[in-house]
Length: 196
Image 1 (tube, rainbow, N blue to C red):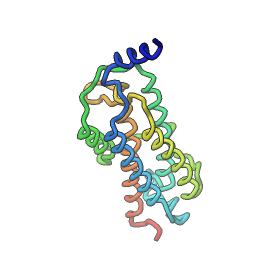
Image 2 (cartoon, rainbow, N blue to C red; image 1 turned 120 degrees about the vertical axis):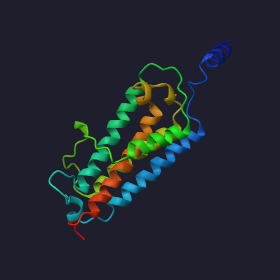
Image 3 (cartoon, rainbow, N blue to C red; image 1 turned 90 degrees about the vertical axis):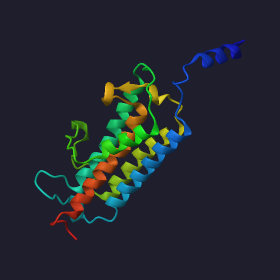
Image 4 (spheres, one colour; image 1 turned 180 degrees about the vertical axis):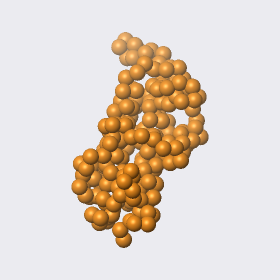
């Protein structure tokens, strides 16, 4: 009788309140892995002068950019957790093309943004190796969550209309944010005064 009640509850759950599809899971994990590698490659082997070089008084060094990424990983992770506590929304029609567009939009450096106060760099990691270890730990947690979660990420939504996004897209934002700032690191490396 108990098993019949469980089956009845599961059968009555909305079909759209399901865990990620394998395609969604693979798409997010692929991008999270790729952007983890991109950042780790971008900061590997930097000298102290390269690590701390600022191309201008109002520009961040690679150390500051990388620290911002570590802090933002947790900031966005916590935001995703808060979104999961929100009531389930009505189903939205979202396809993989929209998710890819979301990634592209979030990584676009043509629109400047002000970093949230909790993600402002303050010199917490003195070397690329120390920062890489911390970033790897936090990103691996995100990847493991995406790999294993059974949470219905698509039904917890923030915003409205064209600005609405779900928890899955919030996790994609973590990856896109890394792409955005790896491009910024490359801009620092291309600056005329960058130490060789």
